[in-house]
Length: 284
Ligand SMILES: C[S@@+](CC[C@H](N)C(=O)[O-])C[C@H]1O[C@@H](n2cnc3c(N)ncnc32)[C@H](O)[C@@H]1O
Ligand SMILES: O=[N+]([O-])c1ccc2c(c1)CN[C@@H](CO)C2
Image 1: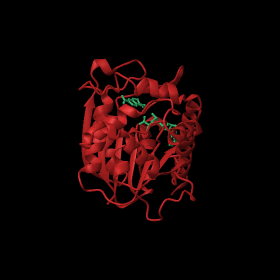
Image 2: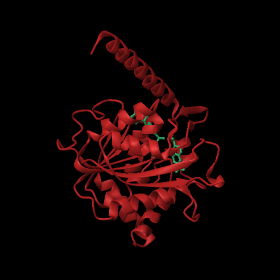
Image 3: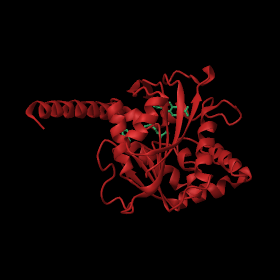
Image 4: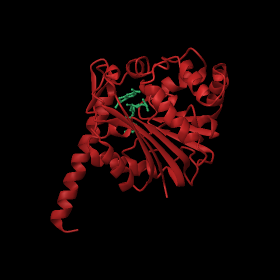
């Protein structure tokens, strides 16, 4: 690499580090309870509304986890935040689940749920009941599903998707890697730009064994969201083509893309998201 190219690379690296550091600063005010209130209560989480976002997400995850092409023991959720919906189907398929997040406040929120009912900021019962219905079980089986999830969560780990190795080396992940990754509204919400989003996809790919699957849910057309009162967090605005290109450029085979377009009733003033994507991909 000649001197000029080396200088340009060093400048780009410095810019990238500044962008990532700025994102870290944005997240210092993240408020798990407020975030749950904004996004995981009606109308966005209304199980009686055909056009509600959360039932659409749960349907995508249920189909992806139960269509018969997944196997193994270990599921890792990347950037869990204070939410559990993303592993309610997967916990029936995998015997070991790792939840992960960058912030201790979110890891603490998840630990509170693990302690038992009534300790967490949101009542996840309607979610558990809805996924039981998707599985053809009676809604009252939600207590069995809650017990199953509590039994398979192996640890709640710190993670940073901007590191080439996002998890700490002694995180007890199998050497070969996880059998499945799920990640929802994380990478585009923590990356300063598209290149960083794509790089983070590459970093988490290293957590996955060859032949393992990635289930990715994220925001389309979003430039910011509120992570709490007065906590405005910038987001990389993505379109479908960029999502597919980044998934492929970071070394996955795209299995399918599903897209949800927000109706007016789902725009509640906490972000400017216009759609949600669901990607099922595979590490060759
Ligand atoms: C929009 S929230 C998504 C939460 C949840 N997965 C969901 O589906 O609602 C983004 C999450 O990314 C986490 N995060 C922030 N910086 C991160 C980083 N560098 N690496 C991994 N996660 C990060 C935040 O703490 C937050 O929980
Ligand atoms: O409607 N939802 O289910 C929902 C859930 C979480 C989030 C959004 C929408 C949109 N903003 C992202 C942050 O980038 C977080």
